[in-house]
Length: 170
Picture 1 (spheres, one colour):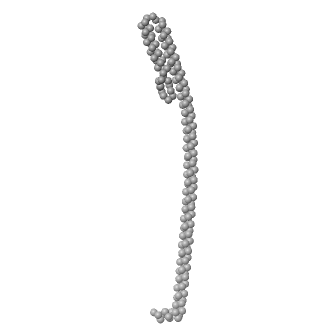
Picture 2 (spheres, rainbow, N blue to C red; picture 1 turned 90 degrees about the horizontal axis):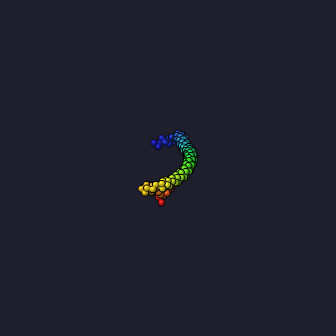
Picture 3 (cartoon, rainbow, N blue to C red; picture 1 turned 180 degrees about the vertical axis):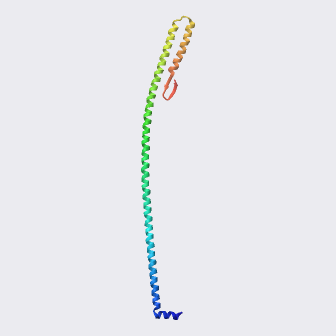
């Protein structure tokens, strides 16, 4: 009612009530401002914590990357060292095999030469033996034998050992 309001204003009670409301409103406003400031500070701290966490995570990942890179480098170097060692072993073995091949080729050439010499000696001995007989059948048998030995000797002379082929007839 209007009369009651006028009475409150005249008695000063309305002013006192308005002062209380203003004071309460100021306290509420200050409290809200403080809460807003606190929320802003908390948000700032959380953002800073998030940045710090991201930086720390990045640092941890960087350190892990460095460790893995070093490990990969060590493993790669070990592979290079192992490969060089194996290449050395293969090179030594290849040289050994080449020396052995040369030795075997020399032995084969010597054996081939000796077989040729032996066939010539056998042929010569057969001819000498055939001269001791006057019987034409015996001489013919020795001539046939000599012919077979000469055929073997001819085949032996045509036989050549080549490194890339086992046998080549020329």
